Amino acid sequence: MPQYIRAFVPGGTFFFTVALLERQRTLLIDHIDLLRKAFIDARRRRPCTIDAIVVLPDHLHCIWTLPPDDADFSTRWHDIKSRFSAGIEPGERLSTRRASKGERGIWQRRFWEHCIRDEHDFAHHADYLHFNPVKHGHATRVVDWPHSSFHRYVKNGVYSADWGGTQQAAITRIE
Image 1 (cartoon, rainbow, N blue to C red):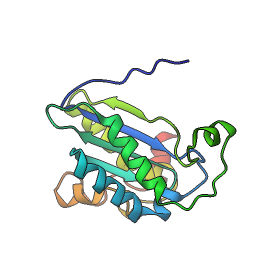
Image 2: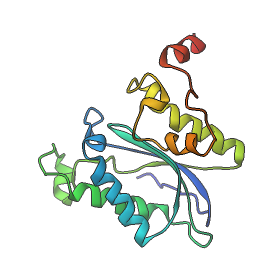
Image 3: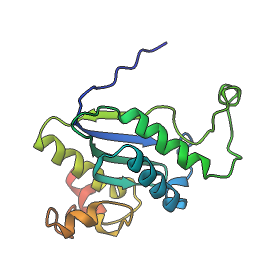
């Protein structure tokens, strides 16, 4: 059995990717208000700063900064995932293992985290996160995706509203 080692950095800043188990589902945007409430409730119990976030139909990315004496992001994710799942009508396909453990089949069991090293690393991950709706074809322009902290970043002067160009421009740059 794998031994997962999580970063222990009190007050650290982390980039996360959290995904639905069935990636073709659109639960996260179909139930965006429930997801927002799960985040609010979790942060009320265990505060942290959400520096950046984007929610796509089947996964989300975010950057959090934890309080100075706290390194426990796993409990926060468990709380968010549990509260979101509790608000979703049962009926998803369950593996025998999940059914035997009384688990839901909504989220992938784990999440991916990366400890942000410096301001350049933060900017790189914030850019990646904010461009993700265009990358996955959910929007033609970054500004068109509503479930993103990009709009806060524009308001605060970090990005211009036309940052990231268009999907076609991004494809042209890659080719």
